[in-house]
Structures are given as C-alpha cells and as structure tokens.
Image (cartoon, rainbow, N blue to C red; front, side, top):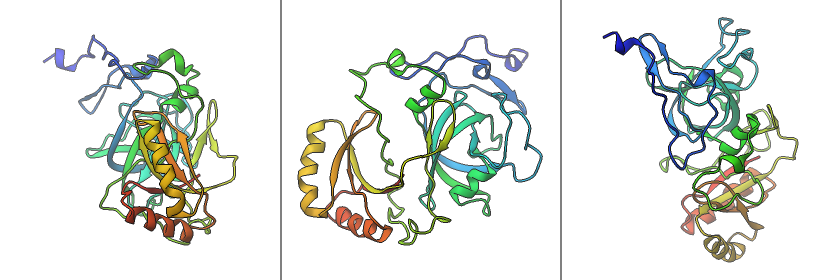
Length: 286
C-alpha cells in the first residue's frame, strides 16, 4: 500500500515518432485527492470531451499557475491535467463552431468527465460562459508549442522525411459529422458574435495582426498529387479561388477555397462543395 502512494520512480518514455517535450518541474507525476496524474512526455494530443471554465469568481484570479505565471480570468489561457506545460492548444466548441488557440499553463480540471478548464474570458469567446460547460475538441499545435518553448523544430522532428518549407495555418480538422458545418450567415459581419482565432508569437499568444479572412477548407491529403487533382475540379465547381496549402501532420497537403466576402456566400459555396461529395469541408475564419 505504501508503494501505491509514492511518486513513480520510472518516468514515462517519449514514444518513437512523437515530438518530445523538455522535462520540467511540471513533468513530474502528481497526486490530487488520492489520484495520480502522469504528464505526457510529448506534445501530440487530440481529444473530444467536456470543457469547463474557472475564474468566474476571485478564488483563482491573481494566483500563480502551475508554470508560475499569474492567472488572469480576463486573459485567454487554459488548464489541463497531463499536457506538457506550457504548450499551445486549439480548442473548438463543437456546439457552435467557435475556435480559439491558447496557451495551456495550468493543471486541472480535477472533475471527472472534464478534459480542459479554460479561463472565464476564453469561455466567453467560445460562447459557453452562461452554460458553464461545452463539448469541445482539444488539439495541441506542435510547431507553436515548440516555438513557445524556444525549441528549434528540426532538432526534434522524428520519423519525418523533411520539414515543411514554411508554416501555414492548419485547416480546421473535421468534427462530428452529425453537426452541420454551416455557420450563421450574420456571423462574420457581427464582430461581437464572430469566432476569434488567436495566433502565436514567439513567447505569447496575441491576436492575429493580419486581416481576417473567410475560407472553406476542403480536406487534407497525404500526397501532393491528390491535392492538385482536386484543385483542377474546384474552379468550375465554386467559381472561387482555390489553393493548395502545406500543413503539418500525416496529411500535409490541404486545399482551401476563398476568401469570401460574407458568411452567406461561404455557406452557399459550402453547400455546393458538400453536395459534390466533399463531406469533410469546413468553414474557417482567421
């Protein structure tokens, strides 16, 4: 019984093919209410579950996070039980399509059935402050997490043939097929309701300085030839500009259409694309 309550002596080994995170104080196993948690030694993570938020009152506001930073309920941040700290993650509210990229710098939530705790401000931006919880997808952004920690990506690339020539924002991955990918026509015009996407600087998370754009991501492919073949068919289908973009991951070639001047126009083109059999197409705003 004594052994069950002691900190494990053997740390978890970073799996081959994953991007290993540096070992820090926050990498050690820890115990909360009799339960041991084991921080993962790599950045890759992708999970769907329930999000909640903290900082609704003043209990946590101003206190240090697990990384030693000051928690501000009015800033964009998040807490996770096992992700390497700090890191950058993309959180998508699957109930309304809103998406945000943020820094994970704290531990929690220690409530069964919840996978992430975001700050009150993040809950507002994702549109679930009043409800309290939401079904979300949490996906770590490996290149941004490396940049946040001052790590040169080529030094840690494993099982990859070569690095992409340049970083371009990844498309929104497919979500629950039961949910409609269409978004309200007024969404892009109403700045109070528009989803807010945050980009990453070298050491912090700041709003994008570039102009916003409204696009449709058709899908991602493992071979460039597949993306190019799709590009040839999209011009006649959508009558809109189509381009191939390079992303990270197992399917690094993605196809994007746009930009569009309004959400109504994007929804119209999205319907055409979906009817043509491209079921993974999604609207993105950045």
